[in-house]
Structure formats: C-alpha cells, structure tokens
Length: 486
Image (tube, rainbow, N blue to C red; front, side):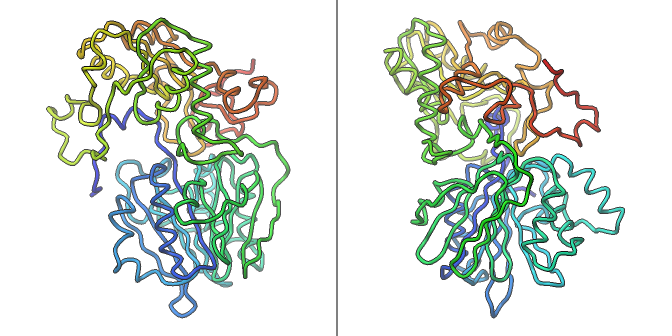
C-alpha cells in the first residue's frame, strides 16, 4: 500500500515530473545523492531510489515509497549504499501505473550486461514507449516494471556497441519524447538531454568530484559549484575527474519546457541563466500591465503564486498581503479521507486570514488553472471571510492541452480551458473577473523581449498552444487528435 493519500488540493495541480541526481568522486556518494534528492522532493513525492557502486561490494540499491527524509536519512539504509559513485531518482508517476505504484516501478533501473552493470534514472516521458515496448516484447524482452523508462535498459541490451556509453547513445537514438537521463557504470557518471532539451539537467563541481542534477537548488544543498547546464542533445561522461562531451543526436533547436519557469522548478533555482523567482515575479508584472483591476489587496495562492503576486503588487501599486495562510506541516492527508474530510477540501491546507480580507476587494494570484475545482473552493473561502470582491489573475496562459513529455496532466476533456472560454471559466468559478497572462506576456517574462515567435517557438508550450514539438505517436495511435495547423 502507498504510505500517503492524495489530498483534494493536490488533485487540481499539474504534478511535477521527476527529479534526478548523481555524484562521482566523493566519499559516501549516496549521502550526497540523498541530500540532492531531498532538495528535488518537489518534483516527485511518491517514491525514491538510490544506486551506488563500490569496487569491493559492487552495485547496491535501495528503493522506498514516500519522502526522502523518511527513508534516506536512516544510517542502516545508507550503510547499504557504499562507494564514491551514486545516482538517485524521486518519482511522481507520469507513465506506467498511476496511484498504485509497485516497488519495481521505482527508479533508478539497473541492468547487468555482458560488458558490465549500468543504472539509469530518467526524467521525462517517452512518447513512443508503447510501440517500443510491444516491439521489444515481441523480440523476447521481459519487462519487470510498467515504466516507460525501462525501455532504455532493454534497448541497451540489444545494442552491439562495445561500451555502455555507446549503448546508451544507441538506446536514446531510438526513443522519442523528452528525456533527461543520469546513468552510471562502474567508473562513469553519465548525463544526457534529449535533442530539444525539454527537461532540465545541470552540471556541478564538488571538491575533486562532479554532480549532475535536475536543478541548481540541489547543487546548493551539497555545497557544489554550478558549472553549466547540459546542452540540448548533449551527452557528458565523467570519469577520473574528467568531463567529456559529445552530441550524439541530429542538431535541433532547443524547446525547453516553459512550465518549468511557471511552476515546476523551485524559485531558488536558475534556469537558462535566469532566476526562477525573478521570472515568476516578472510574470506578475506582465499580468498587472495586461489585466489591471481596481482592488484593495493582492494575495497569492501559496506557495507557487507568491512571486507573481509580489510582481503584480509592485507594478500595480496595490498593497501585497498574505490573505491565505498555508499549513506548512500538512504534507499529504494523514488520515483516511472520509466524505467529511473530503468536504473540508482545501481547508486542511489553506486558511484565510480573515482580519486582512474582510471588506476588501481582493486580487488572488495563482500559477495555473487546471480543473478549476480548487479555484472555486478558494473563492468560496475568501467570500466566506467577508471579501467584497474576488478577482483571479493567473500566472500562466490557459492550460488547454495535455502534456506528453513528463507531466501528469488530465485528459483534455477534464481541462477547464479546453471546454470553456475565459468568460465561461470566470462564471463557472464564480469570481468578479478572471484573467490569464498572455502567451506573449509569459515569453516576455522569461526574457524574450519580442514575445513568442509563432513560426519557431523558443520554448515547449504545448500545454498552452497545442503545438507539440514531438508528435506523441503513442497517443495519436490511441485516437488523440492534434490541433489543426493554423
């Protein structure tokens, strides 16, 4: 059984994909990986795993459900992971079995090949995994998990290349979609990004060793110096203190996930040389310029709406206030969610600061609207507290299309923006006004002064635009209809 039960507040948010981390060239590398994974916990809270290598004891692994802090801080667990080389993964399932994860689905995955062992951790989603899986099973492969990432191990097994690094290249040339990969052999730490660089991966230096991470915030926690981002389509191999770079894929224009800037990444991380916090604050500035409204108070929906609300307040001149307080100690629901508990909805996690709200015209700033159910509940809480008016300002464009690149998005019919206009959403949520930042405004906030280039978009924004940089072949085979060309 899973140790945590989802809470209604979580069900109306896009789920962070996964987090990956690896270290080479430091004593007790697994301890550093555990710290790194703790910093990446926001990217996946379902389960975690670490694989380490020691020349005497060989490869060892530990996989656990739940939070890093509850598993990989225990001395008896960490003692089973010796060595100066280790990789790890925190998971939220975006492919495979959702809601009933088996321990065999937890990464990193390990394979023992004729030329040695290799462990691999993957952030992203393979859009042709179903077809690959069918072909591999037809050729005799025996899958142990429901994860799309296991395809990579089987493709490596079928490669005729003489080194594991080259086999990884072979395998990744056969997959489609989004992948940032951290892998390890007995002597090497390997990092790879897909040709479009949809998911993040960064390189850090710690002492005489190196680290690979989904985000820079995890380098900070272990005291590593940020070196650079791994480029789209780049593969780095780290061995004996030397970093070797190659580009095994056909050149392509990068299309980094713009939602990493909006929501997924921690605000203290750096993406593309830009502070995530500053980008989110700037989104609020753009919102205030695009959708001004007379009001008395700007309030964030914590925590992800806070930087945008700060920017909105600064640009509009309307006072900023913490009108909603988050219970920081709640985590997931700690009791069985009976009907009575479900009816409490977001109140278990969020509470209104009544003294601040009463009688005020309130602007609520949130990062996104997915199903809209949480927005309705928060609006009700604000009105119950005596607010005179409620205006929603959303720090992303309407989310009208599902993501197939490593984010758990509802099917399109369940996305509010896929079935309603902005005015219809405003009426359904029941607020005085509802406005989203424009796609051009979002692009300006991430540093593209001229906005979005419609002929060659600078980012992957498929969840907003419906323009998928990699055709989701498995989904199309199942009947998914792509947006018609404009």
